[in-house]
Length: 173
Length: 98
Image 1 (cartoon, each protein chain N blue to C red):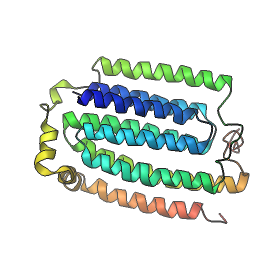
Image 2 (image 1 turned 90 degrees about the vertical axis):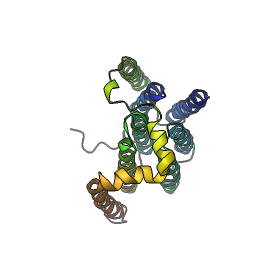
Image 3 (image 1 turned 60 degrees about the vertical axis):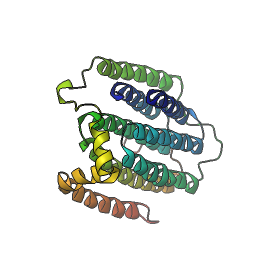
Image 4 (image 1 turned 30 degrees about the vertical axis):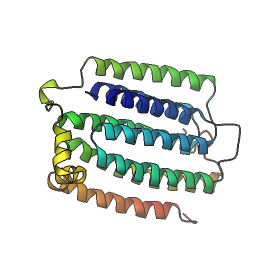
């Protein structure tokens, strides 16, 4: 049952991603990307990461994609134009690169080159922890105990990004 | 249980992001493809965190933060470039070409 739901959402995510990179209009691309992000949030729920799924919908599908759409409309790029997809050589290079990369990575995954079996927790450990502690506390505890310093450094990063965005978007640079 | 399938989906989504960057010339669409790649990596983090402990979910938080900062600064740069050159087509933005 979970596997069926997983493959349904995975198929929606991949199909939407293909449409995202092939649609001519940037607005259509952005909306298909939102569809991909929502399907990924559903997959996160299936993988016992409920809080991350909520954050995905709020931060990615909500905030970041609204920022993209806002810039597209601010620059008036939504009108139908000749399109920006590269010519024959660009398509050829993209196709060869894509096929080579996916074969390489899937080969690694199927050969279990990436999964250190001795480190794996017994199945259901994380799900049980989320069940006992609640979805938020299970993530907050490592975040504010083991990763407190990176968390605080993140706030400096965000401050720098805010200042940088304001300075760059000023009328006279 | 879902680790293998999740990693395959993650690989396919990452590849689609790379193909999008190679295929498109619009700077904003290229940014969206980069977001797609970051999301593919997030998916593999979450899939591993189901098997290896909750630290992976903390990393996804940091990736989301960096992605938000990158989108804000990158789109500000796109707006600044559009003001100067009246285009976001990367073929016309070649000031640094030797």
